[in-house]
Length: 122
Image (cartoon, rainbow, N blue to C red):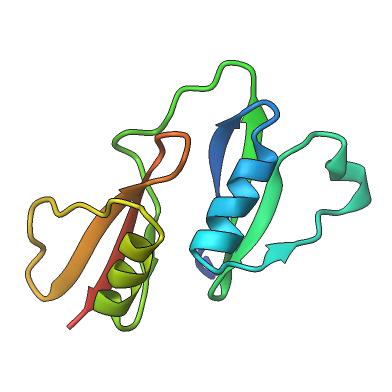
C-alpha cells in the first residue's frame, strides 16, 4: 500500500449559529480573504469558506460553540509589519506572545474568540 500526504487542504474554525455575516466581515473585510462559494449541498449547513493563500479556512456553525483559545491555525504572511499596522488601523488588537526564533509573529482573536497566529519566517 502506497500513498502520499500532500499537506493541508483547509482548517475549520467553529463559530456560533447565525454568525456568518460577522465572520465574512472579519475574514473578507479585515483580513482580505476572498470568500469561496460553498457547494450547493453544503450551504444548508451554514458557515462560510474563505481562501487563505493556497489553503482555505472554513467556519462552521455549532450550537455548542466554545472558542479555540489554544489550538489555532498559523497563517504564513509576507510583510507582517504592514499586516499588523493594517489590522490596528481597523481597530483590531494583535498581541505578542512568546518569541519564536527566526520568525516574526503575532496573535489575533477572531470576533468569536478563536485564536489565530500570523507568522513570517525571517
